[in-house]
Amino acid sequence: MTVDAVPPPSGPQSERKDIFEKCWKFNRARALQEAGLYIYFETFGGREGCGPSEMMLGSRKILMFGSNDYLDLTWDPRVKEAAAAAIHKYGTGCSGSRLLNGTLPIHVQLEEELAEFMGKEAAIIFGTGFQANYAVIAALATEGELILCEHNLHASLVDGALRSSARTLRYRHNDMQHLERRLQQANGEGVLIVSESVFSMEGDIADLKAVTTLAKKYGARTYVDEAHGLGIFGPTGAGVAEEQGVLKDVDVVMGTFSKSLAAAGGFIAATEPIVHYLKHLSQPFVFSASVPPASVEAVRCALRILREEPERRHRLLRIADLIRRELSVLGFTVIDGNSPVVAVVIPDEIMLFQMAKELLEEGIYVNGVARPAATQNLLRISCTAAHTEAHAWQLIEVMERLAKRLNLELEKPAKAARLAL
Picture (cartoon, rainbow, N blue to C red):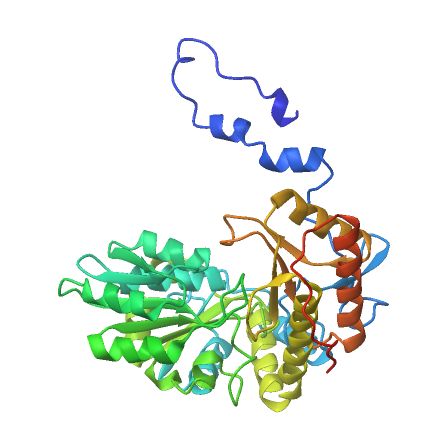
């Protein structure tokens, strides 16, 4: 039976509002499907027989510019072998929470390694990065306290703040003067400042040095999401806070396994008392099954490779910089940044979907991100260590051709000469 065929409620209760009414009325995605512009839930295959940064989509090879596998480790033989060995030794899961029967030696080892890597006393791992943010923000900030949220935060952080009983205020994106005014509005409350390091949709970077300076000035605490900075920035790859020299000043650092660390899960690193508190009072942690052994050992292996092969992160940043500069030269509106995420603003939503769909027809996958998932409609290009200069030029040339074909209004092209790596 199709959704349209579901009968509306009838009988004596028919005048009462049905809780599912909003489901029947939700038609935004169906309208895009009917128009041939729907770009979500594509079903990708593996990489068997594919080149670097390629994936199978049906019977076609697609150049993947939409993956957050920044260091190109999800298919690394060493990572896959580590995951397989964990299954052979520990099975596919613990079938229990960490608090009870779900703690294995490798869970403890990974937490110790992450704490050491992030320069903190302790760490705690969660089933997903979303769960880590949601769980920790909700547990750390309680009634009578204040959360100051960066305006462009990921949904997981926003939901954590909403779940908390603390008062929440937002400060404008990368606006340190506004953050200071917000700090001055605290009524003697304990304050937690929450920011991403690399903003996940836009790809620009937070001024964490200024954030931590203000936090010290006003006696606030800081929580930094390094999901898109971990493995990419800093002398050891510990993230933007390390790059800016303030890692020791950030009170709680969050990271995810689903980007640079080739698995699923997340973690936070902080002082031992904070981690001890969360282990017992963070409900999503206490009442969730532990991270499967295969993911744990995949992360441990990826962490070793990350430290031993820094050229991976250096290469992907050069590729991202090339794409960002060249698209700007062509007249595309590209958000300033220096991260693996190249965000191209496409103001008109229909044009956004057309560009993403046409790119896929040309054999290139990028993420189309429509509001309100981001503050602007964006083509979100993700660069990885698997991309080559040839891949970058292929993307650039196809985008230039599609912009002309679709009559996408571009800014006046810059006079700068074409740039190469």
